[in-house]
Amino acid sequence: MIDETTSETLDLSNIQGNILKGYRSDLQYVRHIALEVKDRAAARSFLARSVAGKDSGVPAITRATLWADPGPEICFNIGITFEGMRALGLPSAMLESFPTEFVEGMAKRSLKIGDFGESAAVNWAAPFDGSNRLHIIATVYAKDRARLGRVQADIARAFNVLGERDGWARSDVNVLGPAYANDGSPDNRVFFGYADSITQPRFKVPQYPDPPTTQPIAPYGTVLLGYETPLEGVRFRVPMNDELGKDGTFNSFRILAQDVQAFEAYLDEAAGLLMQLEKDQHRQVLPADGEKDIPHVKDRFGAIREFVAAQICGRWRNGTPVDKWPYAPLPNPTPEQLHDFDYDGDSPCPAGAHIRRASPRDGQIVQRAANYARQLVRRGMPYGPDFDPAKPDKAERGLLGSFIGASIGAQFEAVMCDWINLGLHNPDITRFNDPMIGANATETSVFDLRLHDGKNCRLRGFPRFVRTRGGAYAFLPSINAIEYLAKLEG
Ligand code: HEM
Image 1 (tube, rainbow, N blue to C red):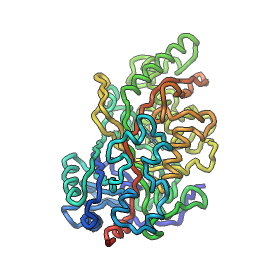
Image 2 (cartoon, protein in one colour; image 1 turned 180 degrees about the vertical axis):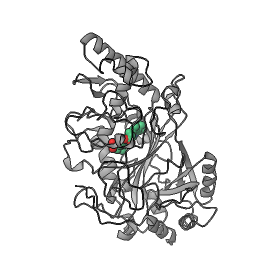
Image 3 (cartoon, rainbow, N blue to C red; image 1 turned 60 degrees about the horizontal axis):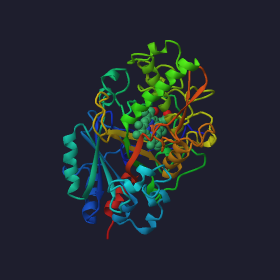
Image 4 (spheres, rainbow, N blue to C red; image 1 turned 120 degrees about the horizontal axis):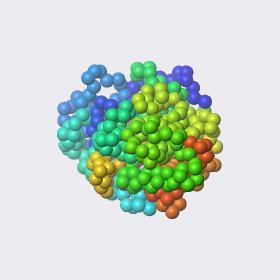
């Protein structure tokens, strides 16, 4: 069980920022820069200066300590791959202490996490193609894009820059067209038009304001090494050594392209079929006149289309949870309404919906001990051009996602493999993939909707909407560990 009264304490100044608390509400632009250590001495000196934070030509590592007001103009953090640890000269006994998933790297493990066909690692662009040259992913957040470029120029003096990816926060208008503007949702839309970053594991950090949610408190070991984990009696192995590995964690970084056009086209197709079902078989998809309660739609077809989108995700596009409000979104959901649900009893939220698969909360699942054990901190930002539904195009756009947890194997890979793609937690969805992000194929895809008449209706024939374009496993070291790496010799 989750212990609400943990006696463990945190030293926030030893923990990198963006783990316990995100930056996106203050800094809307992000750049992930892929780096190679070409010159060990230059790389180590950069790390030393970055930790010291006193050098105007080197960005200071942002820590988890609470910001004074106003907050910083930029935030800077680093993740180091296994090859990066080697390139910095970490002694072999310490290299051997890292878990296998991290040592092998994401490209080698990609089959397990559903990256096959077009998403296979062989199709990933360099340097995410399993290259030994990808050593560090430096992440910069800023208020504007120009600043990102200036920080990159500073970094480029110490490392070989292999490539970069930019993401930025979008307003409702930009991801779905003007019809969806001003619907009371938080301004954190991702492509496919949903509000995102609503749910995160809830930590009790005395220095931070109390998290506004009724969900249980997550032990620190969910996301930091060296602490109690959500699994009773289990502590994840701490790499390097107990002192240096403590307060570190792992980031599963993913570049996920989203086929917005195919997603919206499938909503049209599904709504057409369901209209036919109501007409020919007198089934009731939504309550009679239900379209009156769904904003921004012209008619019943439009309402059913939004209903399908809500069931696929488990939330309406403005974040309202389907578990509590199955037939229409709330106009202005409060934080409590967005968070307070847990699939108990006979939930109207489909068992196969994205958020229910990715986190079953308190709902009954086969692996009962795993309910809250695979929680991940998610830091994501959309990338690529805005999508205009009036002028649909095929440009690449999607999500730069960081899925952060103390164990890649027991959390990120377990969620991707067992839950997103195999549905092992519930016999009703076993064999079927997540309809929104799963490794689907038109010939085999299946998703069961829960209609207003209380019965299910099976949708088929949808393609894979999210393709993996690259990714890497990176260790997010504590401040002590970065200082140690900076002082290595030889
Ligand atoms: C392009 C890809 C993705 C999109 C568009 C997407 C979209 C969303 C949206 C709209 C939500 C609801 C907002 C919230 O509850 O915070 C959500 C929640 C969530 N997603 Fe994703 N997601 C994507 C990829 C992933 C991946 C790869 C994972 C797995 C590791 C994942 C795991 C989760 C989890 C754990 C939640 C929170 C569920 C909860 O606690 O209720 N997502 N996602």
